[in-house]
Length: 157
Ligand code: PNS
Picture 1 (cartoon, rainbow, N blue to C red):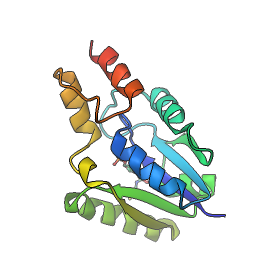
Picture 2 (tube, rainbow, N blue to C red):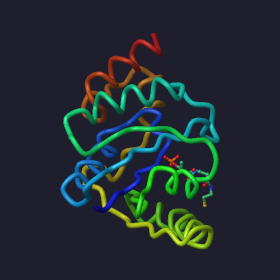
Picture 3 (cartoon, rainbow, N blue to C red):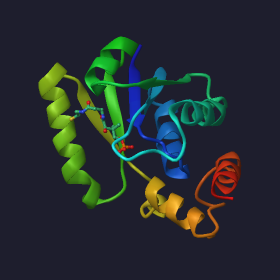
């Protein structure tokens, strides 16, 4: 039985995140989506809101569960019994930082990070840009799930 941890800020979860989770659904026996409670930037949605949104979005898959964590990612990976960490890669610009984190995590606990390339149509998609477009009144309906778009509209109203 192989379990994968997919960590992130998910503020908000985007269709790019869901694409990465969906890829993993068919590869791993168990998937844990790990929401970081306090990301470096103050989040638009608090930890409970982000976990709730992802729990709803992932309820379509039987082998996905959602949790949250505070300290080191490697400690959370041990706590939930993850064998690997999975990160989505959009472009080479993501690579340097992701590679650095994967090496640090491997140094800390030996855990391996696997990278999943996102679909090309999500190559430009980020939570930060979605927030900016939504805040300035642009349409985000093709970028996030309907429930997330509605929550963002309400937050920015
Ligand atoms: O969605 P994000 O913001 O790219 O996710 C970043 C995240 C949560 C994966 C990263 O910040 C992280 O792993 N934080 C946990 C703290 C930690 O373990 N730091 C050392 C890792 S090298």
